[in-house]
Image (cartoon, rainbow, N blue to C red; front, side):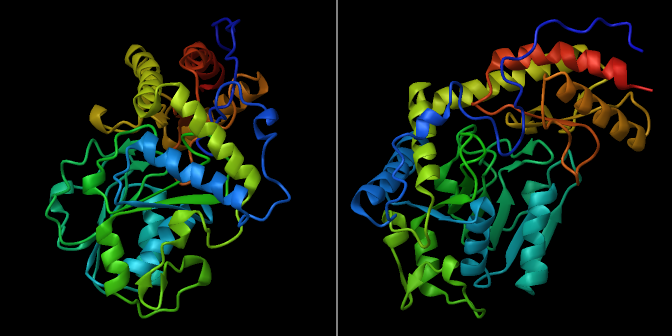
Length: 381
């Protein structure tokens, strides 16, 4: 048994899940009272609400005017796969993977699309591949932030402006919390249920003029499912990017997305969101610096995620023992009503994963830290 006393103060909100993530502070079901339920998503008021999501997204993120934005089916996964199926095969492709979701895109390209000219650049959890080895004459597929490893690319400086291939970026746990250098990115995907704490099942897709050129100049050799199709008669179809979605969207989810974007505007837009997330990372970084029993999975400070913050327990013994301690800690904290869903991702090294996105209040993370110490004392061998 630990000699440490149980802390007396708990976080006001105990939701630190890395997806779906915490709703914005103060959210209640009342936020959805004006949802256009029972209306066709193609009715004028509904299309206007969908267009509101697209316009607010552009304004908050600073998306260039000549980039297109759409709501697409099947969350971030659907958005990524839509563009892999549409665009790959025209050039060789470099696939970057340093955690499970990046590995998933490798599987899609190598085993499903069966591309012969696919080069895979891998790194272990906690590290990045050597970004200097990426060949930008090829298309390049990568996650901006490794949700299951807590490792992010530090910036976009490694991507040249004069690249010949397309950059396809899964940014689902990065966008709205990290700077996106739009001139370096041709395809960006994400989902509402991450940084803005929205509802699941809908993906967001942002594409550059170079991507539109690819859609019109290249026809892939495989069949294209209806929910993936972005061209008609070999020409780019602008309709999905103007609010005329490919399939039926949930107007409840759209209303919730508008609510999240309105909240984002109220906390200072993108700068405010990034500041909130970086402040959350600092709380945990300061705690880790004072306690040698806990460490970041990300080896280099500049690559540490400010959203999916992944931690290890280096003093707990073997990998198996670390896993047992981490599970006990997570169970104890959930039983106390202090934190839920903070265990490491199932494919990741044993440890904890604490969401630090903008919808989490920094004060709640500050209150959580002493509880981590208590739980570790209770759970360690």
